[in-house]
Length: 272
Image (cartoon, rainbow, N blue to C red; front, side, top):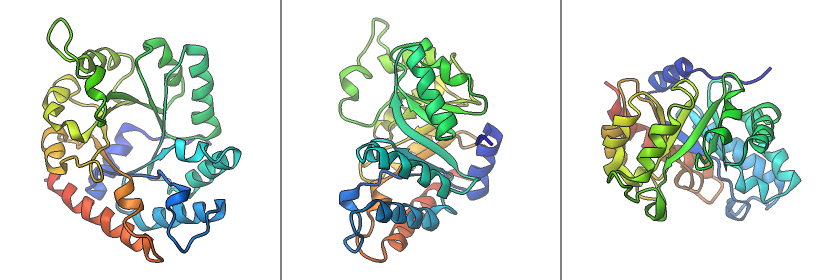
């Protein structure tokens, strides 16, 4: 049975939990707490305890494939086992940042939506519509397109002004938002670019935004919520390292929960 998640269900989870929190499971074998062995069993046990400690506070988990791919075939097995640990009412994102021609995209879509059965995948839109449309052939699945990222290098291309004096990323949002619909498309907008959120919401008034960069990267939670939240919320604010590595001893899961709870409390300002 394929995992499904509708816009209505996601809206309901956000409102029910009064949370925009997305926990990034960017688990690094080298950063496991000191009492855990550097083994696949310990890796999965770490993920299990993080999920158990945070699942009532968050509405999504984002699994960065790089931290699993680096472990080879065993890593993909850990990826699938981690997905199976996540409760059914939580949105699952494969942070894979794929972007390729149509026939290759079709295979990626099958891999992530059928074999791994996640709800959503992050994609680069820069090869154009035909590199993204194969993913839309999978009903009740989502694509999350890179819009304006939180890294320093975003200024190299994304923030470059075009002939009309508007930055390149705005053209990407305007064009790519027409490929799908708000029921199956989100956009990544970095929390460190909070001065751009007003412009983003003028282009995307109803789409969900996936917002990395709060926490370790220094994005301003209050500003993101003030400028980015709609009346339905429509934000997923990601935190990875600040939660995963809040503690490095046997109480690491309790420390992770404390940090997740702190972030959720901040988010409650966005609900009335």
